[in-house]
Each structure stands twice: as C-alpha cells, then as structure tokens.
Image (cartoon, rainbow, N blue to C red; front, side):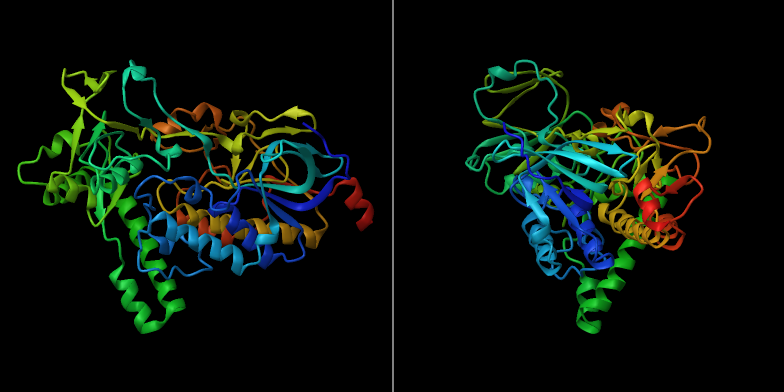
Length: 498
C-alpha cells in the first residue's frame, strides 16, 4: 500500500455510487447547480450499480420503468417491466447525455469520512480497488447513493450438510458466466423477487426447475408492455405521453398500496383469485401462494405476463413449500421427509443490508453510531452535518423518492449559497422524541439489519415518508428551511461574508 503525497483535492459534493441514485444525483447537480464541483466515486469498474452487478438469468425490474426511470428522461422502450440490459443502456445513455462521464471515477471505494466543523468539510479516505493505492479527498457535502445492501456478498443462511452436495451451489449475486444448467434439474431456494425471476427464465432451457420456499410470497402477474403508453405515444408524442403515463402509473401504484393497507382481507382474496386463474385447475394455491402476512407487509412479487405461472402450467417448473433439514449428495432432504434431487442449487435467499455503504463516519473525532441517529426528511441524519443518505421507496418505485430527494438537495444548496451558509446540521428539538426503525418494513433482509440502521421519529420532519404525494409537498413544494435544520457559517465563510 502507498499513500499519495499530493495536495488533497477539494470538491463541493462527493457522490458515492454510480448506480441509478448516483447518476440521478449527478444529473441534478450538473443541471441545477452547474458551478458546483462534484465527483461520483464508484468502487467497481463500471456504472449502473445493481443493473451491472447482477447477471443472473431473467434479471429485470419489478417496477414499471415509466416510474422507475427518471422524471427528466422519458422511458422509450416497449418493455414497461424491463430486463437489466435495457435498464443499463438507459442509465448509461443518461450519463452520456448529461456529460457525467468526466465526473465518474471508477475503482474508487470510500472507506471512511471524517467531518470537521472548524473547516466545514469532510475528509474522505479512498482506496483504489485496482491498484490498492490509498488517497484522500475533501468535500463540502457527502451524498451517499450506494443503496442499502452489500455489493460484495449476498445473504445465505447456514444449510446443514451443504458441503455434501456434489453439484454447484450458486448465489444469484455472484452468477458464474460459465454455469451450464441446460437439461439439468435446478433447485432454486427462495420465494422473493429474485427466485420468481430465476425460475421461469431458467425453465426455458433447464430440464426442470423447482422453487423451494419456506414461506410463500404474494405473486401478481403484470403486463410486460404498457398498451396505453404505446397508444399515448402514437397520439401525443414522447414527452407528453411519458408524463401522462408516469402520472397514471404513480396513481395506480399508490392506489394498489392503499387498498392493500386498508382492506387486507379483500386484497388477499383478490390476489388469490388472480393466482387461481393463472394456475392449473386443482392446483394447491393455499399451500404455495398464501403468505401468513398481509399484502404489502412485504413487497409484492411481480411476474411479467405471468411467466412463473406459465412455467408451472407447462410442467417445466414447480413449487415446493417446506423446510430444509439437510443438504445431501444429490440434493436436499426436507423436514417432511421428502427428498428433492438436483444437479444445480441456486440460493436465492436474499441480500445483506449495509447502511451508508459500510463507510466509517466520524464527526469532530466522534464515531457516528447509526442507530443513535434519526433520519431528517428521510435523507439526512441527526448530528451529522452536510450528509445525505439516498434511500428510495420500499412500497413503490425506488427512483420516485430519489428524484424528489435530489431536487430538495439542490434547492437546499442554492439557498445556503444565497445566504452565505456552508453547514447544515439536523437536530431534533425534542431529545426524548420516540423513535422506530428507519425502514418500517417486514422483509427479512431489513429485519436482519434493523439494529444497524438509523431510526425515524414520530413526527415531521423526522418521519421517513413512504408516500410519494406527501413527499411531493415536503421535498418539492415546501421550504428547504426548517427550525430543526440548523444552518450556519464556518469561520472561513463568516470571514468572507463579513
């Protein structure tokens, strides 16, 4: 390892991550605050985040791209529920169109960041992942756009006897390019979005695919294409059609979520009816597609054009609901005593959550313990100045929240520049305010890490909103100033403005 001796480069904003959130942040900075100096640091060798990292068969979005895409860039592809290559092309087109290539620095992993109130800046420790070199940058603001899961490893529970299995065991987050499953028996362990994507995609060439789940998920067929969007495009042109389709899909998504929250029993019956219509006659729907929780307590799994159900009807895939007792040489032994034989096992068992990309944060020499912080407007942390955490919706398209958050961030910077401020520090006026988890969501990957994440309060601006309409008001229409966001001038700024 070597440490550079060159002067530390200073930037106005340092964005961490070049996935869908980081690219969006870069575009808003470039457009709204063109004088700002910023860089986007990316630990990997390529942009695109999730959509470049994951390479497993069938990978796609589970939100429509008219809302998952950016508000400023219409989605023009015929696929509304799009596969990863199309999404990646869209993201990289956004980079090129907005001149962000020059701002992205690849192979730069942020290890730690230290805030100095005296200097009103972050000092950021960076490792070059290609050379091992260590370097430092400084920035007025740190914008963490790396999402909330670990990129280097997925979650795999401990499976007794795993070492006994004679075939390959693969986690989807680390899909090998040379995995040959044509004509083979494939066992996919899991019941979430990844599993329901993998099963129909692999069933096209595998001998047979079995989805083994401990607990069922809600699964709903959705059209891969948006017929109305196509008609609007022909009538109104790209821009107007996109705006109308986006509003329509936002309203539909909010309506479905509210219906499920208000009438969970009716929603459960409706989903079951739809599942029954798409499955073979006499299929044990209640055994395999009847979760023990209410709809939208966890995210619903979308299957484009009902492809999972079609694979089940065709006999190329099936679902087994049971628990694994142990792996065997030829597959797995279940708690029921049944044995499932397989040539290949895929552990679609979820993600590992990692807040702020695993960056070690300190403020004036004191380590930041994330569970002791409270999220301000769902985007900043109490007691942590000039820091933004970009987390999207769990009950809707991720990017809807990111777009509003980036707008608000740019408005806040413009306000601070106009009034001579260079420090923004959120602090609750009531130190005894009750708190609850930052992400109030029942999904297993969130629950496993809930004690490592920030908290949220019981009142605004300390609530983490999952309502797009509420956030439009809070982040777009309302003022960027708030009594619980303390704006101040550092000594250097005060001297300049005196």
